[in-house]
Amino acid sequence: MRLIRYFLVIWTFFFVYTFFSFFLGQNGMSARKHLEAERVRLNENLKTLENINTDYQNIKNNLTVDQDSLSVYARQLGYGREGEEYIRIMGLGIAINTDMPAGQVNYTVSPVFMSDATIKIISLLFALTVLVFLLIRDFCINAIFSRFSEENQESDA
Image (cartoon, helix red, strand yellow):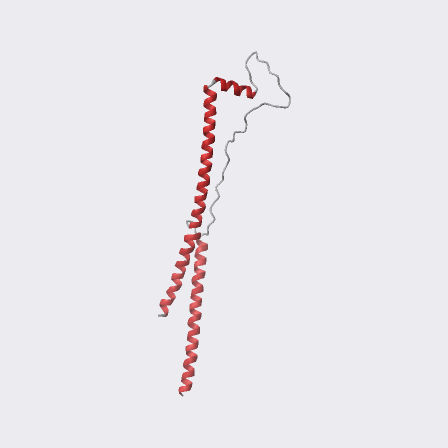
């Protein structure tokens, strides 16, 4: 019967290892939630970049096809046709539409998780704690029974 109790040490190791791996391990729930949030953030950035790309494609198509748009854009850059005269006002600069964003760089953040070696060490410590508890318990029970049996032997004599 005592030997069966010591299987509790092995089961404790496996239970703690499984628990920590499932929740805090490399493929655990915490890391998965972080990766899901990262995926949502990257998908939002991708949609933003696709919208910006669509805007730039529309501007490019507009400038390559429509001559009026091309002449307006050329005037914004400070170009003109032959024979045209300009009046420039000092301090205004060239009126170029530069508020078009080019997107932003998003860096992925690695998920924080416990390494497998750390989980194994924690599991081993829990198992050793259970082992020490069982050994102390058995030692105390044996000491009490031996003391009790000695008292009974003395009272019988």
